[in-house]
Length: 296
Length: 340
Image (cartoon, rainbow over all chains, first blue to last red; front, side, top):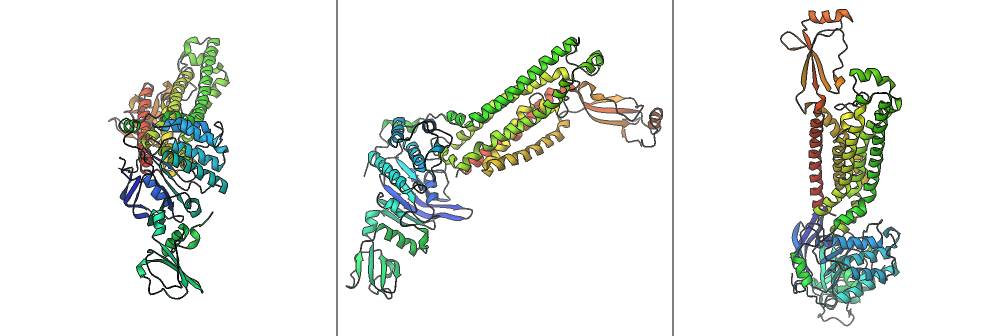
């Protein structure tokens, strides 16, 4: 572990369950301090990737390193915190007891920080977890994860079960902590709107394979959305640059990988939005459009 | 980019070398305290009842003038003089206690072990617990010890109290080496609890469903106890008692002194086991002659003496603990292999 290690680095990572491969040939490097969105339709392998990174599942192929240390299914790296889907907590515990749990289960624990995070959202310490709202439970789970003072925090669909207002509040609280502490954040979502304003790095998964990976700015800058008259694919466009083509009776929209092509004047070129990019890659991968929600 | 000096802060460096101090005990106790305290309350109430039973019985015997008759044996002057006068309530309780004591260990074991891990999987909280700084083996071990050990201690004491309380009743109480006496007096209740608990805890890890784990526990427990019952006569080579040719078809009550009669058979002059036809023999006076005519020179009683009680208890407990150890091992291996 050292300063130059990426927060997460996967090499040829793969995981096969009895029903088949959940994740294959996954290689990426996530710089420390990134706020990464792990995006993909349901069943794309997001949870599998996160559980491998959290060290609670063993890779079938390849490896994943957290802060330079390869994890091997023996629990999480000491500087990594993981919040699984639905943020399970002990429902009969009070909030106070959940904090005691965090203190008891971790050698490294920042009690005052965790308490402050709870106080910030005005959750009574004496309340039982089972009586809290979904948003409050997520906040308690976050306090528990952040109380470990992790260098990297992985969240599996942290917003999925929340109403829109709670989504916003949780996301704001989360980003405030990222800014304050500089931790690396990776959160999975199947809703692009949840992540497009807050993340600076994208990992796009479909069918267990990594489709796209990189800083969002750079990804957007190296893609182009061309709109022009309907017809066959224009001859001036290199075939290998095309990510996806969609045509209606009147016009044709093409997502390309390069921006430098010169084009006829009846073609319009714009930088794609994150949503254009994600949906374009998912459609080109043969995914049905309905599985990925563009907005909540 | 935000930089944090991971490798350079003293806290991080210290953390690398020293194992983090954790207190899983608190968490396990917080989770299991209701089950543990309820079990102990039940065991305590039973123990108290047995102590009161014994004290009342002894004073009742004293009232009858039978102070010297403890333990109260079938044969001997005590039984003849006082047995008919012992109040029925003592006999009733002495008959009921073994039933309760027989059901209690598997019940407590299944209810403590079944949900111990299955409920974690049902609610997904094993992921919460195993993504802190505590490894799966330690987590398993502490939860297991906290849920089981207090109840094991309680049942150990209860089994000894039951043995002590029933002793003055030896003529009516369940016999030491026979079912249900053997299974309810001494250290067997504690051993049976560990067995049921081990089945239930491991079934919970494998099935990840509390109800299914408890159901499977009952089935496996019954089978294992029947197997132990089959093995029990062979814990030690039986003693043999050579008897004369009986005068009637009814076998002598060789277990009068609390010993365990395993077999009764006739032998010929060369000491071999024979099976004479007895259906043609008339009852009473002709019976003995009828056997002698068929070459029977005596009868043999095979039995386990009553003084082997503690030896048999130890063997039974060792077998139950060995089976439990295998089950525990399978459970912890399974838990480590598959967390999510």
